[in-house]
Image (tube, rainbow, N blue to C red):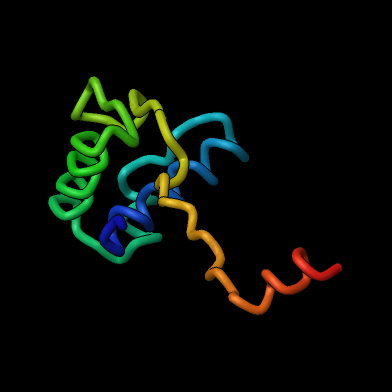
Length: 91
């Protein structure tokens, strides 16, 4: 599970790029997250290390490419109900 800042950054990048076909500038990300530029840079580097984005030019956000939009979580199987067996056996 992603930490709060990284999850928020990923959602901002995905939604902004889908609507505007470009990446948001750092000043806008600062405004939307309420975090400093150093924290945002650290969060973007964390997303890059976890392979959610690629970020070639660290000086600008325009070079960011999104690789994955969401976390891949394990699907949870429903709990087995022992009473369900009677339905299939005695139907």
